[in-house]
Amino acid sequence: MDLDNILTTALEHDASDIHLVAGHPPMARVHTVMMPMDYPILTPQSTMAMLEHMATEENMKVFAKVKDVDFSYAIKDTGRFRVNAHYQRSTVGISLRSIKTDIPELSLLNLPEVITRLTYLPRGLVLVTGDTGSGKSTSLAAMIDAMNHRYQKHIITLEDPVEYTLTSDRCMIEQRELGEDTPSFASGLRHVLRQDPDIILVGEMRDLETTAAAITAAETGHLVFSTLHTVNASQTVERIIDMYPADEQNQIRSMLANTLQAVVSQTLFKRIDKKGMVPAVEVMLCTPAVRNLIRENRAFEIPNVIETNRSLGMTSLDNAIAELYFNGMISREDAIAQAAYPEKLERALAA
Image (cartoon, rainbow, N blue to C red; front, side, top):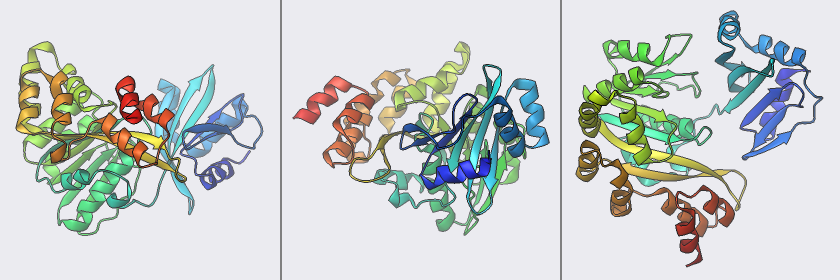
C-alpha cells in the first residue's frame, strides 16, 4: 500500500488529519468527521513499513526507546504533515496532521479585528489557546507573517515540529525545530535571548521551565507568542499559576500580570453556509482591571470583565458563537454543544 498515494488522496478531499492503525483502513478527518478511505485494511507490518518510510534513523531510535515520536514529513510538490507515531495494542499507530503550505492572510481567517491589533504590540506575552485542531497554529502563522511584511525585525520560532514555512520578507526569520535544531523548548528559550530576537514564537508552554523562560523573555522587552491547551482566558491564567510551586505563586501572579497582553481562545466549527470551518474566538485583553484580578488571585472573575468590556474588543466564547449562529454560519446544535454555558446560550439563541 503506497503511503504517499494515501496522503495525496486525503489532501484532495481536504482532510485535516489521517490515521493509520492496524485492523482499520486508512481513516481521514474531513471537516471534523472521521471517514474510512477506499483502501484495504492495514496490517501491523504495513503500519511499521509506513513509519520506516517517513522517519529518520534518529526518529526510529526515539520511537524504540519511548514508544512515541513526533516529527514532520513532506511529499514534494504535494504537502507537509505533522506526524505522531505510537504503539496501540502492541502495534504501530500513526496520526498525521496536514500542514497548509500557504499562510493565509490574517484578514481572511474570520478572526476578530482586535487580533490584528495584537500584531502591533511592542512587547509582552500573547497566548493563543484551544483544543488540538482548533486552528491555533494557523492563526499564529498569519499573525507572524503580518509582522514579517510590516516590520524590519528579527523573528525566531521554536516549534515541534515546524509547521508553516515562513519566508523572510522585511523581517529576518529563523525557525528552529525540536529534535533537529534544539533539544527542547526550554533549552531553545534559554539561548534565544543571546540571538538578538525582537519577536519570539514558542510552539507550546508545556512545562514549568518553558513557561518561566517565556515569561522572562516577555519581561525583558520581547514580544512573545505561545499556545496552551486551555479553552478560555480564566482557565489559561489558572493553568500557568498552577504550574508553579505554592510558595512561588504570588510572585508569578505579579510577573504574569505585568507581562501578559492578551489571551485568544479558539474553537472551530463546521460551516453550514459553505464548505469549510470557522472559528469562534474568545478574546481577553489585559486591561488594568484584568491585571488586578490576576495579582489578587481572582481569575474566576475574568469572564465578568470580558462581558462588560466588549467595546474594547473583548468577547466571550458564547457571544462569539452566538454571532456565528446569527450570521448563518453554524448550526444551532453545534452552537449549543460547544458553548461554555449551554442553557444560557440556548435562551439567547431563542430570543
